[in-house]
Image 1 (spheres, rainbow, N blue to C red):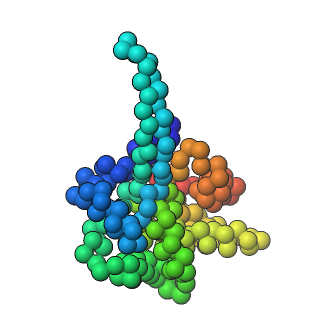
Image 2: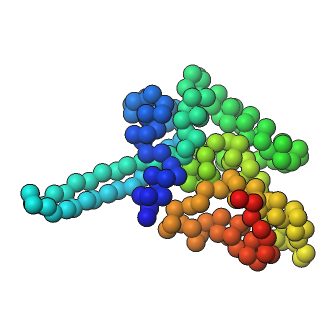
Image 3: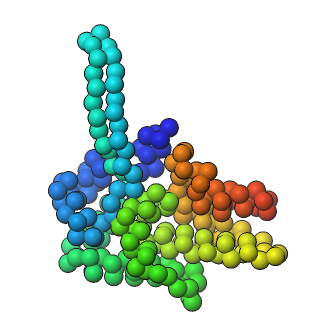
Length: 197
């Protein structure tokens, strides 16, 4: 189930390289310069099989990236280094955040670290700054509304819908512990909110 999920919702390194026209050395150089995220998943596979020709064993370590990674690579490839990539990330994140809430604040340094670590390829659909901003803002709004004695149901439904739109479905082994489970599925069930598919 995990490999099916990863192949459906992320890009393995082979597909990422094909989409960007980079070779592995160029990708790893951009990662070493802290301009491009690390993989969101690293899978260690040990395969053993038997056939008419006898037993066979092999190992592999495929890496999986957010589906938005090719677009991010395209945007930063010609930039001078981490400072310029970080500035682009902050501009794009801020533009989306301001569209949601003109007075909202963000910890860009922390978001950038999580972005580079590959975290947002795991928990957002695209892993791009705009979606990260939407996810983080919606998460904070849902938490704030849940802390109220009588939450505004329309505001809660809107925040949950936004979080749903930005959040990945999560890998099968992670769903029960995910923000999607806690802040989308459980909140919709508790408040009988309809999702906007």
